[in-house]
Image (cartoon, rainbow, N blue to C red):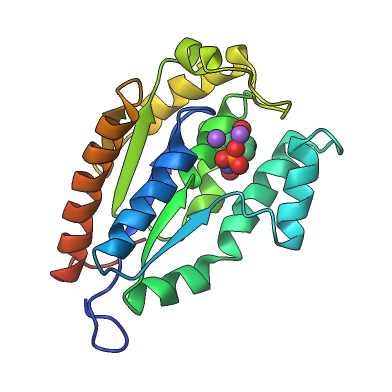
Length: 210
Ligand code: DGP
Ligand code: NA
Ligand code: NA
C-alpha cells in the first residue's frame, strides 16, 4: 500500500520491555540513526503524558491519584486511541514511528494485577498493528539490579515478575526478542538491523493492518 502522497508508508515499530530494560535510550538512539540514514522518523511513547488523559495517567502512576484497576486500564487504552488518527496519517505519509510501549504493555500490566486477559485486550481492538515489536528481554531480577527503580506505582520486582509472564503469553509473529543484558552497543546493533528490515518491507508495500 502506497502512502497518501504516493510515497511508501512508514513502519510502526514498537519497543516493549520491563521497566529499566533500557528501552528509552535504545529507542532514541535508533531514531537518530534512522534520521541520519535519511528516513522520516519520529519518536513516540505511551503513555503520552501530555494529553489530558495522559495527565490523569501520570497522576495515577506517581501515586497522586487512586483509580479503579479497570478505569485506569481504559484510560491507558484511550490514550492510544486519541493518537490513532495521527498515527495512521503519519505512517501513510511515509513517516516511521518508533514507539516506546503500546498495547502489549496495556494488556500485560493490567493482567498482572489479576484482570481477565481477554477483557484487557478488548479495548485495544482496532488500533493499528505494529509491523515490528522488539522485546528488550531482561530477567526481572536483572532489571531491578540496574539501580533503583523510581517511585512509580509498578516499579516493584514482584509486580514486574508477573508482567514478564504476561509478555510471554502475548508474544506473536511480529515479536523479536533482543537480549537486553547484552552490551548497549550490541543491543542497538540488533535493533537497527530489525528496524531496517521492517522499514524496507513497508517501503516495498507491506500493507498496514489492524
Ligand atoms: P513508562 O513511561 O514507559 O515508564 O511507563 C510508565 C509505567 O506505566 C510503566 O511502569 C509501564 C506502565 N504502563 C505503560 N503502558 C501501560 C498500559 O497501557 N497499561 C498499564 N496498566 N500500564 C502501563
Ligand atoms: Na517507568
Ligand atoms: Na520504562
